Length: 145
Image 1 (tube, one colour):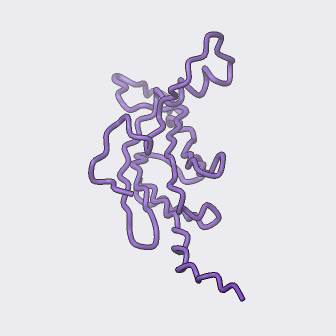
Image 2 (cartoon, helix red, strand yellow):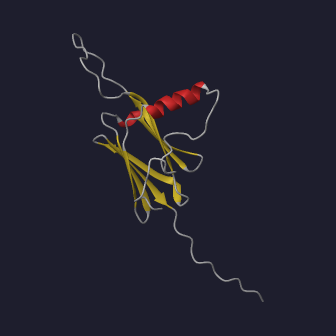
């Protein structure tokens, strides 16, 4: 997998669905809103034995972040950021930070080991590590006697 040339329309980033739905369901509308409101930025690195997804999650608590695999090849990072409750006498004068539900999807390569995924959130950065399957060994010649 070559990650050096990566465009937003790359199959690695599935943030927007290419599927057109004439009558969207409530679930699809909610998911579309969550994707549109996603403030997360991500870097993806490939190492010899694993992939690493580094996602900015400023102000997010680890308990509000979900990491899962759908359809055996799509890494889904989702959750919900919540504002602090206003204290007595305090009110917002300006609100610029996005809060609410978010979702980010990434297509995993065929050599991703979807049963060995680890996630860690520290200092507002989520790091998800996906191990690679070992490369297949050389095929042995078939001996016919």
